[in-house]
Image 1: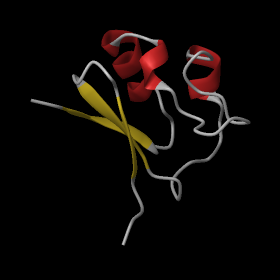
Image 2: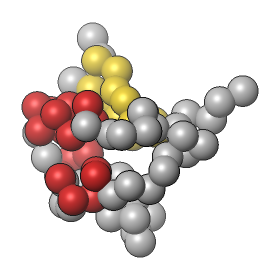
Image 3: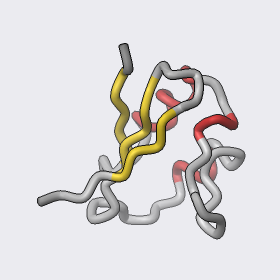
Length: 73
């Protein structure tokens, strides 16, 4: 079964989904939103450091599909 790690945005609009097995560590996420993605920190993903729209725009650019999101109700 595929492992999925969830990082909810505190505004409640979206949850970032990360599939570590798919991640190719291309660094697109870190370059586009360095305030959110900090690979040397734990947790490495801090979605609260940006708004929903730029986060979604960055997630769509993930070359491996390791990052996705779900809209919350």
